[in-house]
Length: 329
Image 1 (tube, helix red, strand yellow):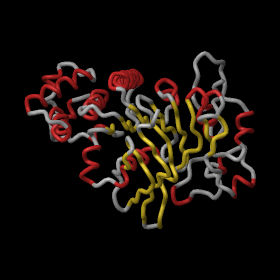
Image 2 (image 1 turned 90 degrees about the vertical axis):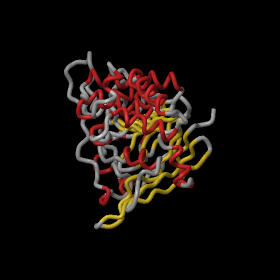
Image 3 (image 1 turned 60 degrees about the horizontal axis):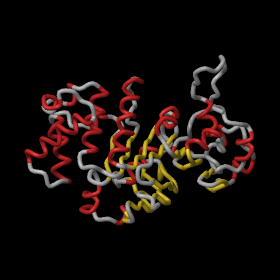
Image 4 (image 1 turned 30 degrees about the vertical axis):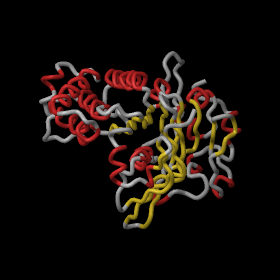
């Protein structure tokens, strides 16, 4: 099967007062039709910038390079007019914080209809009817009445549902979800994730899900890519990566997840903090925090390479990491 989305050598940098900084470096992954791919990592690892770069939503002083092919067409070489037809129509995005992503001075019904007006041939009556259908679809009660409400009149979970309704208005074939459950309580998180999966099944829609929550990845994703300091350091199926992580950073993330049913034990933590974009260390960026690091890690940057079918890692000592065992095994 041919991937719907093919990202290759995606690199995004910004010109700052302190010089040039690279937020995303040589990122590459595929998304098959109907597949959910998770982008995982700590804050500042480049996950959100990657999604924005895919849709060319990064503007000056940022520069995006690389290849992003959507159904065989390179989004990086499209004109702005062509790209506007893809954004919101074929590829939709759920932004991280709905309170800032939604327009506070417009009723949510108008904001849903804006997408329909831009990407469909529906008349005003049909758009209003479709907006009600979408509100029902995402589980907002009394949809007809609530279309007239403003974003501040909705709870956090309901605002997130409105964002999903806007994203799905034109029946996209790819959904880019940037931490869609951030700041929501666990019950609402579960509802939102189930909703996304149900809509994925109904619409045969691919999903790229950005999150730092490995519990979410385990419950929703088919494949995962772990990011650190702007690079993908490990990628594979969720089952393979959880069962046998080959990068020390992946192992640390897995070990920091609380597990029910286990005896009272200390959580594994990752010492230190992620490096700033302007101060990424030479060699492997994770080496100052890695217990497996040696001299080669401090001198040479490991390349992402396949060591097993569909399982890739960028680590000089990945076999030693794997031999240490999975914290969730």
